[in-house]
Structures are given as C-alpha cells and as structure tokens.
Image (cartoon, rainbow, N blue to C red):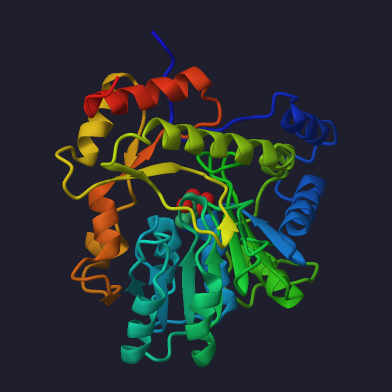
Length: 379
Ligand SMILES: *Cc1c(COP(=O)(O)O)cnc(C)c1O
C-alpha cells in the first residue's frame, strides 16, 4: 500500500547535516544536556531572527512558561491570550496560577483581532502580559496590536512556535514581541525531535531563563537553590538536529509555499473553498495550508477529513478555540466585531488543515487536491 501522507512530519536534510552534528557530539561525548551544539544553535537562531540572545529549551511550552516568569507573572494576574491556538500557548498561564483572558481573531488574518483586544482593555485595563500567536505560519498584525497595548504598557510574548522564517514588514517573526518563542516539535517547520527556544534582546532575561531552566542552580561549588527551578534545557543531541535543520529552513519554506500555491490553483474553480488568507504586510512560512468552506457549502470539514482518511491521508480540523475548551470554561472571552459572528468559532467550524508535509511529491499534492475536488463534483 502507498505510504501514509502526513499533515507535517519531521523532514531531515538530504545532505545529512543533522547526522554530522550528532556524530560530532558522539565523538566528543557531549551527549548530556548542554554542550557546543546548544551554544551554537542558540547563536544561529538568534542571528537568523535578528535578536541578540536566545535560550534553547526542551519545548515551546517551556519557553512560554519561562517568558511568563521573566515578566513576573504571579497568581491571579491577568494574561491576554489568542483564543484560536494550540493549548501549549496558554497552559503555562495556568502553571503560574494566572488567569487567561481570551481574545478573538479577525477574519482577515485569523490572528488576534485589534477590536476584540480593545474591548478586553475596556473591562480589564491592567493585564500583566499578552501572548500573541502567529497562526499556521502567518504573523499577527503587530503594529495594530501595539497601538492598543502601548497605551497600557503591556509586554508582548510573541508565540512564534508555528512561524519560524515568516516575516512582518520585513522583520522576522519572533523578533516582534518583547520576548519571542519558537517550537521545534516534530510537526513544526523544522524540528529537533522536541524542543523550543526563547529569544530576547535583553541579556538579563535570557540569563534568568537559563538559570530557571537548569533547576535554578546557584553559581557555587555545591548544589544551592534559592528559587524553584525546572529541567527545561535542550540536549546537545537535539540541538545538533536543530543546527542541521536550520540549514534547510529556506528550502522547507519554499516547499510549503509551493504546496499552498498548488492547492490554491487546484481549488480556483470551486467558489465554496477559500485558502487561509495571506496578508500583504508580511511573508508567511506556510507551515500548514488551511482552507475554509463557504457558509452555504453542503460539505463540512469532517466530510473532507473522512474522505482523505479513507485514502490514508492525514488532515485535521482547525485548532479548537481555547474559550470553548472545558479546561478553560468560565474564563473571560472577547469577540471581535464582525456582525454576530465569533470569528475563531466560525473558522473552527468551517476550516480544514490539509496535508502540508514537505516530503510530499507533486503527484501526492495533486492526489490530495483531486480527492477534495471530487467531493465537489470536479474532475
Ligand atoms: C506547537 C505550539 C506550541 C508548543 O510548542 P511545543 O514545543 O509543542 O511545546 C505553542 N504554541 C503554538 C501556537 C504551537 O503551535
């Protein structure tokens, strides 16, 4: 049988760059956490993004957790969050016993709505931080978000877990907030098998983050601890994979864009299908190619997901908004102002993430598009 087609799976370089860095780690016995690959991976990501300092961590979720700690978030503090996102971007708010306040998306970018954000400030004028997500590889509109947050002096954590390599007005995502966060989980545009990174121009913040990530060990000869720490650092082996992957990031982005454009072309004659919008203010990394079905469409997302699954092809619904999740029941939510539609719910109800794996051949992409086209009665 044909091999399964995935949504987004790890894709090591054809040249074997990752293996070279791992072999080097084996030769020098730098297997343990930390080591030269970690130091270099931090420097290379910081240079790529255009931020001065970086801390390699065990996951993107860990990076968001330590970003919240670095901003001094404590029990009972309010943190504004994008609702249309993956749980990893919000769960750390609860780790610190702070309170998430969910903000709706706008339909032009699927990212945080300035209007909904403004509404939230009318009720809660003093959040301690805001976590803005760059969804599916496209930057949020930071100039418009900052118009609101700057008035209140709220620091921005930029959740760029899905958007490494995307830009906003010529600036790399991750460099747009006060603290930026990346994920190198297996499904992301590049992977370390599992990992994350926190980037920040303030060296003190990054030093503090490294300290918390290594069990808050004091710099003395014995094990001395004044604070609660975490085991959040990246291993030298994982960082070696990351260094190899970074060399093919541009190639991966080009392929993701090719996949998006092939779907776009394939569905051009089906008015009930629209691609996720691409905003003129930046260049996405096209991490996942998503479609949204017209409200009048007789087919629902699960009709497409089921038809693809029958052919051993993976696709997914859009992230279910956080304000609809049982674990976040009762937390405040502010919707954007687009008629009586709650945009994040509407996108969830009508959207599908199509397979966007960079290992797909042109024939694979044509086949996926063909299955969808057939559902709409097209050859
Ligand atoms: C993947 C992801 C995270 C979490 O990253 P992990 O490395 O899986 O912990 C956070 N936010 C968003 C938007 C993500 O897609």
